[in-house]
Length: 191
Image (cartoon, rainbow, N blue to C red; front, side, top):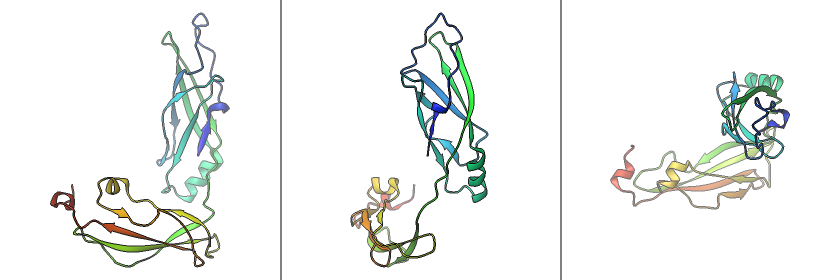
């Protein structure tokens, strides 16, 4: 989700004797009274020649349906602060409309060939099913799987097949997840 600060016009510099080069100027942005689970990807902005910047708004999947509805109805309020070369600041508060996306399809865990994997090594085939809003299967849908970055980067868990697959006639994709059999004792122990 992206909020464009083009809906926001920054105030005139406080001291007109000191010019503020707007292109490349840095500003900060903070949300005012946001729900828990709603945050900005970055609070530092770099303005373009028109005094505009783009910042991503992150909405947690844990937000309730009521909170999502309220967010869509009320939008968000934010404050932007521009610090001028003479160290004076220009502050403006504004609000923006938020469009909360809804998924066209739902992906569901289907099955696993094993209930658990051993830290001594092994693999399991896990499958997922993609359904439409009425529960029907979706054939031909691209699905991209990923493992928790911390586990994959440490080599503790691997995804054997291509992470990008297309659902079959049953709306399913399958992945083989493997724990290497050559893990050290320290890799097997939780930190």
